[in-house]
Image 1 (cartoon, helix red, strand yellow):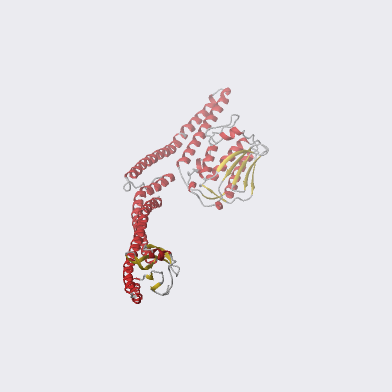
Image 2 (image 1 turned 90 degrees about the vertical axis):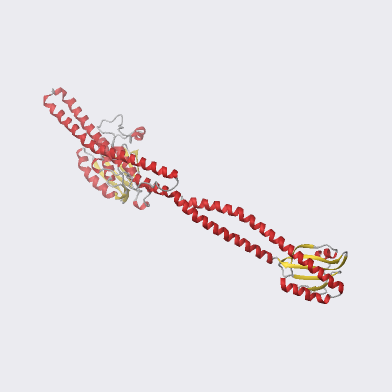
Length: 473
């Protein structure tokens, strides 16, 4: 923003300078040209009078000396002709004496007792300003005189003034740039500190509040309001985290005690009530798992961390080995297929929890004698494929909603496993989707970002999961 403000100030200053200096330069150029033309015309008139007297008195031999002295002093080129247009004298050797110039327009006009002024191309090809005056006494024409000066004598002065104006403009722009840079830095200082503060707040904690003592009053007020809001938000997050930690202990104890009391009732109940007691104990256990999942999800959302390179193959092999024995009890085989995936970006511990939740969900719906496949495909994509009943399209869309369970579901899940998985995958910069598996069942696809696929982006900042409590069934 500092650069944009600086460019704005400089652009405005440049427009003002251009609006002032360009008209000034054109006015000076026109004035200088007019003054130069008047000076040439005045000198031509004076010289025409002197040469007319010499011609009248018959002193034409003195004309070369007269115009030679003038040329030596001023640098002008002078040509004197008699009343027939024949050259009597000329400075330099451009036109030899005796040349008839009566056919030239300015000479012919002067011999008709009319002065002329204009520009013409000299014999050397350069532009020249000339003034041709008649040498006359009253109506008697005795000759004419042409005085010419190279235009470079005036254009050099015009170029000099343009250069002076450009240098002055550059100095003004330099001064404006210095003032504008200082002003822009002063204006944007609160914004820079505010940007750093928002980045810190996004990471989970505000350690350096934005500067509210410098800059424009509006930005100081904004920084103050942001600090107040961030402080209040941080207090609320701290309170929520404290609640999650305390509730994890306060709720587990009464639920455990309730389950024990219900189990102790069994010897004293009529055998016909045992089925209802077992269902009640199962509901208490499910309630405990639901509380466990809610607290895990709350801790995930209230913490933050940064994705790190994680070996997908090592994590997959470790979790597959851990689940093989449990799957074998249900007569379900666990296989790992696909080529080596290498390292992917993931927040610490996320892959373990993602695989555990997906495998746990798949085992609950896998019939005995089937296979649960953990497949790796190119592009750092992980598939957890079961051979269960699968889900219809409408249910696949809602499967990531909290507490949602399929209408025909007969298992005791809490509806929190997939929301936790999606939270962990997105926090790692990936995405998870559900698809029908070939031949029936469900294919949970987890697409992660390979480490070799590019540098970490700003969006990689993510919540930090809690290993011990992130699995919900």
